[in-house]
Every structure is written in structure tokens, then in C-alpha cells.
Image (tube, rainbow, N blue to C red; front, side, top):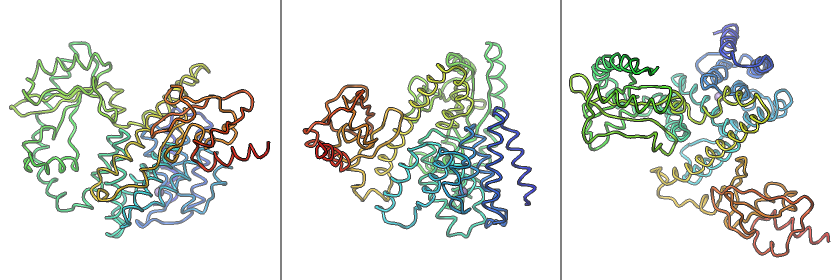
Amino acid sequence: MSKQQADREFRQLLSLLTDRTREDLSRLEQAWEFTKLAHGETLRKSGELYIFHPLRAARILVSWHLDTTTIIAGLLHDTIEDGGATREDIVERFGEDEATLVDGVTKVSALRLKGSTQNVFVESLRKMILVMAQDLRVVFVKLADRMHNMQTLAALPPEKQKRIARETLEIFAPLAERLGMGSVKAELEDLAFPYLYPEEYKTVVSGAEPFYREASEHTEKMTSALISSLQKEGIEGKVYGRQKHLYSLWRKLSRAEIEGDFMKIHDIVALRVLVPKVSDCYAALGIVHSLYKPVPHLGISDFIAQPKPNGYKSIHTKVFGPGGRIVEVQIRTFQMHEEAENGAAAHWAYSEAKSHGAKSEALEKGTATANATKLSWVKELVSWQDQMTDSEEFLKAVKFDAFQHRNFVFSPNGDVYDLPNGATPVDFAFAVHTKLGFYIQGALVNGKIVPLTYHLKSGDVVEILKSKNIHEPSQHWLDSVVTTTARRQINRYFHKK
Ligand code: MN
């Protein structure tokens, strides 16, 4: 495919961005020109021009409704690693944020899950998560990059295919799940599945086919019955069937109680009911149960009243569909649906940030919300890291020093700091900025005042209360601080005096 074809695809991408300013669009065009220049005539293994790769990664970011900075970073994401550009080039032409994102993606890409030892792997993973925690948008670009690499994996030699597919299944799909990006997780898993387990993949595909077909007939009948009942109640909803994706179907089939029997999987095809408001969800549940009897024992799961840990919200119920076949019905609002599919990305969505921008007061509020959201996702990410080290089969044997004496604490706007055990708010202040250390009047941890000798714990949000003028450090601080930076700064202050 030619350069002209790539330009045409790029213009199509621009045409999807009807909500952007003219300035945004011209910055995107600059990024495209920059990428073309950086990658030149380079080809990928598939024989295609390299520029199609960043272009299609950017296209994926557009489909997640991300902001312009992230899309630009998607276009530029390989220009440092493979295109000979420097961080400075990107800062100069585009800005600090874009450069940080591209740099972050480059760093993450350098970390490989090879046959490396557990310790090396854990350390890489820790670095990866820290890089990502600085700006969550790095993860989105990395996921889009990985998605396109998986879509074009066929062109690589078998050895590489296996390594990349394994990395996808073990790191990137769980990461997407952790971030609540359900559709991304499912797609990555299904792309990796045939490369890692070719035989099992074939079995599942051929075994599932008649069940998909049969179940689809039932759900089609149910769909039209439900739509007309919703209309009668004045609810403007959407109803459609969704197929369980192949990898999760296989995982479920492998469970002991299922015994590989497709008949025992009730959500092989599920019905989705999307409605405008939360109250409509419960009304819709009533309608479903009036048309189809709920299955005793299997029951209703109300993840709206009690969301899953990753934020997933929905009502699930299992009913006897036509012909007595058990069918799962999932009911949620359109908003919940967007969040279930795109998760963290939905919180970064361009239109949302934009709508807060109307008034300066609203903008401030918008920023506050964005920060709070960012913060909670970052905390999620860090806690995921802890859990992952527990659950990963091949990591189980090892004790993780790397994590045991580390504490990840946060500034009020979500920046993450990696401090040693026993670190105090004074250590934190000097880690943020030496200047902040000399203005400490007090400290809040998770919104409560704490003594300056307090030992910070992972997940703490630390806020330093600043004095107007320089606040003399106390000699006693030297007894409690543990970081070299803090100790050195305090000592230096007393020497000067
Ligand atoms: Mn790439």
C-alpha cells in the first residue's frame, strides 16, 4: 500500500474528529507529517509501509474517544525508538505532554517479558507501572500499539509470535481488565489465543459454532419481545445479543464443574439491555422477569448496587428463554455501558473534558474531578501490581523484596512517589521539591492531620501544608527522615547557619 493510501486513511481519521478545534486538527496534521518524515520508506515485516502502524494505532485511540494529545502521541509513538527523533524534537514541535507520552511508551516498549528471571521480570513490571502511573495516557497509547501489533502478528516468525502473544495475555489483557476496558481485554485475548493454544483454539471455534447459532435464534426472538415491552413503558432502550468471546469461553470450559460441556455455559450468548437511567434498569429487570421466568438458584447479580472492584456496573439475571434454554440478560445504562467497554479511557474522553471547559468555575471543578479520577485509577494500578505478583503462577515461588520495602504514595493531584519504608511526610516534601521541604507547616494524610514523624504507607495521599515564608526545619526531623535527599538538605541548612 502506498503513501497516497496512507494519506487518504489519515484524512478519514481527521474526518471522524468533528468535535475538535481547528488548532487540534492542524496539530494532528503536523504530527502526521513528522511521523512520515521520521519513518520514511521503512517497511514492516508484512511488507507494508511502517507509517501504517502509527496511523492505525492512532485510529484505535480515536475509537476510544481520547483527547488530541493522546492521538498525537499515538502517531508519534515510534518516532524516538525507530524513527531517529529525539525527545527534544517532540517537545519543541508539539509540547511537554506529547513528549512525555512518547517517551513513556518508548520506555515501556524497552521492557520485555523474555525468558528472564522472575526478579528481572518483576522489576521490569514495576518500572513499567511507574512509567504508566505518571500519566495514564501512556497506557492507552501502549494498548493501542499492542492492539495493532496483535492484529498484524501473522507477519512475524513463530518464535516472536509466541513471545508477543504471551506478553499480551499475561500483562496487557489483565492491565486492560484492571482499567475496566472490557472490550479491549476481550479483543487482545482473542487475538493472542490462536498463537498460544492453536489446538484448543480450533476445538473451541468448531465446538462453539452450533451453540452460537442456536442461541442467536433464541435471543433474536427475545430481543424483539423486549424492545416492544420497553416501548410500551416509554423507555427508549436498545437490546442486542452479544457472543461470549472465545478465550473466556475456553477458560470457562476448562473449569472443573463445567467439564468441557457447552450446555453448562449460560452466557455463551447474552442479551444486553441498554437504557437511559438507573431507574430504567430496575424497570427493565421487571419487564424481563414478567416475560421470562428467572432461573431459581442462579439468581440476580446487582452490580449497580454493588459494583465490581474494577468499577463494572450492570444487573445480570438468568432467565428461561424460548425453548427452556437458559439465557443471561445484562441490564445497564448507556453511560455504564461506555464505561464497561472503555473504562479508564472513558474518563479521559475528550468530550467530557471539553464540556467542563465552558466556565472557569466549571473548569476548576472539571479539573478536580479529572484529578480524583486519575488518582483512583493510579491507585488501582498500583494495587493491581501487588495482586499480580501474588497470583502469577511463575512468580509465586519468589518473595518480592522489590516491593516489600517500597511505598507508593501520592500527591493530591495523583503524582506517584516511590519512597522507602519508614518515610515521613518530611521525606515526601523533599522528594517533591527541595523548596517544599523548607515550607512545611504540617501534613495531611488522606485528609487528616498527622505528625511529621508519621510513617507513610502505600496508597497514602499526602498533602504538605505550606507556610508563607521559609519555615525552619527542626533538628528532630533528622531522627525520623529516611531518605538521603531529605537528610542532606536538612544538614546543609544547619551548616549554612
Ligand atoms: Mn509501535
